[in-house]
Amino acid sequence: MIVRRKLPVLAMSLGTLVFLALILLPLFWIVLLSLKTQLQAFDRTQVFFFWPTLDNYRRLLEDGTFLSYLVNSVVVAIGTVIVSLAIGAPAAYVVSRSRWREFRNIALGYSLFVRIVPPTVFIIPYFLAARIFGFNDTWWILIVAYANLNIPLVMWSLWSFFNDVPRELDEAARIDGAGHWQIFLKVVLPVSAPGLTATAILTFIMAWNEFLLALVLTSREARTLPVAIVGFLAYEGADWGLVSSGAVLVMAPIIVFTVFIRKYLVQGLVGGALKG
Amino acid sequence: MGRTGREKGTQVVMVAPLVAALLFLTVLPLVFAVLVSFTDLRLNRLARWEWIGVEHYVRLAADPRWWSTVFNGLVYIVIPTALQMFLGLALALLLHSAIRSIKAIRSLFILPMVLPPVVVGVLWKAFLLPDLGGLDYFMSLVGLRTPGFLETANGAMGALILTLTWEWTPYVMLLLLAGLESLPQDVFEAAHIDGASGWQVLRHVTLPMLMPTILVVLLFRIIESTKVFPVIFTITGGGPGNATENMDFYAYLTGFRYFDLGYSATMLVVILLMMAVICAPLYRSLVRPQLHA
Image (cartoon, rainbow over all chains, first blue to last red; front, top):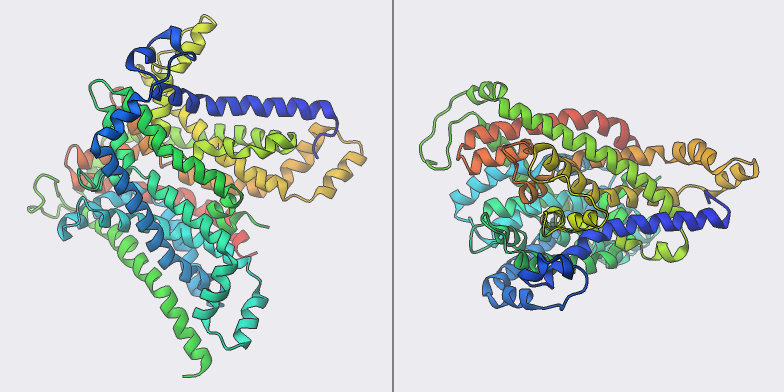
């Protein structure tokens, strides 16, 4: 403990709550906004006490395009999770278990490198490749582009979760005649299931949240929710009812997921870089 | 083939997809971007293009708008990162010594960092706009007026700095709190027995022991601080004028609004080189020693 007596602890707690209020205030504001009519939104006498309406949500969902963008977002995010894990997990196993130094260095250097490269750098090559191969404005091009950004993150985080699986388990399986695939599938993966789940959810969040590549690589068919919300901002006169209710719906699943994986978030985000 | 040979073969099969992804999804596109930077390729006439050598690089060096975006880019790296580190550390220390029931709701503290960046932008735009916004309302309660955030160049920059600080302070807090919790407790006990004050303990025990973690978090923040495109796009759109553009934003506009893909690719290559120059020494001194530990 840094501070011992009761009073400072209370002061600290109070300070923490002030911080929390500041963090939650804009979130609270957008939720309020999403429950107001256009008139109420601009009415200073109805800031906190007003007759809430779900009208904005109804307008949002009645127009079928929002739902089709929702489907796009879900499909792309799940596709990204599957591809990134299928490619990243076996590689993370080799990095974690093998004495193959050169590969380990290449794989980890790659992980950091893709993180350093601003995603903007990829927009031109991916856009042109999509044009050339006819994948423009499809789920596929987004899944491929997001896999590129997320495989390194998956590897980075799984590498650390796999390291936590005791080597004695590998040895026991090896004595029973198991090869690398069996050790990977039947020992390491099941034992690190919580870490694996957290990594999958983190990847889902990354793909769900992504904006720049979706903006460039999709137009109408494969548009995802973040691009759709920016569409409501439009240029002349934003429809704040749609913007705010759309924003609330897009962030709701993310908030649920976050509460779910909080315990594994640190390790999932920075992998082994903070251990020790 | 013996068992070890076969095992080596299995490992090769397990990493092959990764190597393919690295080659086809990362390396080839980057090489392609470099090649495009030496052409006059335009979005509105993709079929006709010529090699023009380093012409775009020369043009870039003399482009005043580019240099102002470089300056803005540095502002977005330095100021929000400094604020995030300072506030994140403060919040981590507070939360570390707060009562249990507050620690139990710590998930709420980290919401800003996991929200879609577009939503973060929309959220703050709604909060900062006069008439609609909460800030204006709260300030009017105490008889003040908002400083016209989105109309002036400095105000818009301030709005972005505020938003980025809000978005990423929780990230710093989360990682530093994990660092604090992994410190050995007996050192703190010893310091207290020796009669050290809370402030002395913080200054001479906690901070020095936390320093490696602080540095790694700083490295990650510097890397991530270039990825502010969605927030700029939603809150200021680069404006007023082009006062709040960073390099990415200018590169995006050049390629996809002004259709000048070749010039845009040149900017992207230079951005990549700049990040490599900034991050390589940090990586070598901060992260690598820990990876091999």
